[in-house]
Image (cartoon, rainbow, N blue to C red; front, side, top):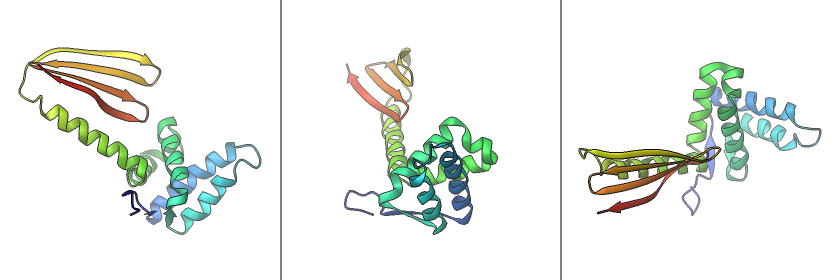
Length: 157
């Protein structure tokens, strides 16, 4: 771990190495000449079984793109999706998403057993939604965005 609590590296199993390499090579093939260099480097780095901190941003980007676009499933079926999801969860970005989900669950846990009085979902812009919940004495606003979700506000009263 680094001083900020982020992993200094992500270790990959043999199956994860193959999944990361497969999707990374697919993205590299789609790049114009010269722009594929970082992807080719990630393929070589993944081969070692350890992706160090300085390459985790690219590893995250490859995982997210492969999962969001369906490329992971297209290339390797559900197994590649599962493997890349497991890898992403161990990156700083994946850890941040897990923390956000835990924080939201903590807030939602405070509402358990209370009658739901209102609920509305508002589309703000592509990939961004606002969920408002009114639960006897509480109001919660959740923002649901492409890069995660978070509690925007919690009001009592």
